[in-house]
Image (tube, rainbow, N blue to C red; front, side, top):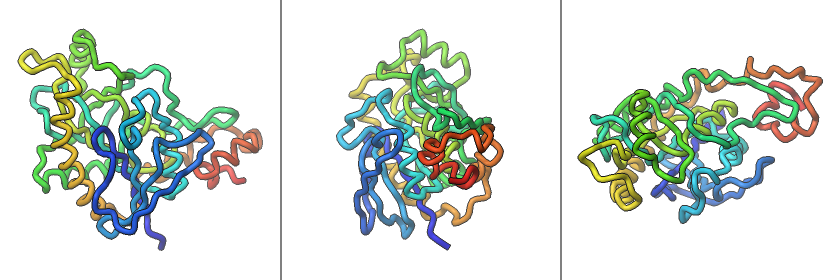
Length: 288
């Protein structure tokens, strides 16, 4: 049986993954344009992996500029069945402190104009997204995180805002009143597209600050974020290295067949060009 590729998405501060053996770079062209950067392929803990810097090496792309479709499609073309993600977030709860790590299992969308589906142009699918992250993968990240000594929180809601500005105080207080746990700018679209691509997805929310709701902490700013992020990134790398070794060879979760009953368009009504472009994702369900 062929080895299953594991994807890794590095967010702010995590632009490379040390320890990759036999690594090489590969540029992927997709029907949706170019991904954020070249994928770095190699072996980590004996497992085949592909690493992508979400914002590009050197942090060149702001959240609204990210080509989420190209990034996830590229992982699909490479054969990824799992994606481990890491991103910087603000905490909306007193007990979730800076330098903690939370594994969210829900999202709330406050973005405005981001492409977050592969479908359209004559091919329509509606995937289930009630539980937007992979439970199996999230549990591995949580368990491994505790083992390496991180302060971990299992479950919670990630509110995804447009950015690139941080929240106003009014927004921050309202989000808190909604009961969300962390706030960030990137992970929701990744989760949606990974589900459509039938790739397991889970993320580590690396807490850098208390946003601007907290009366006794300094307001969130790039300097304070980077200071805490540098510590969190080292922990995140340790978690990824340990988690890769624990990912099972076979998938039993719903992520693996999310499209099975989701495509609603009549097969003979799907444009040939759309079938061709989306073949890595839908080919097993709609044919050539």
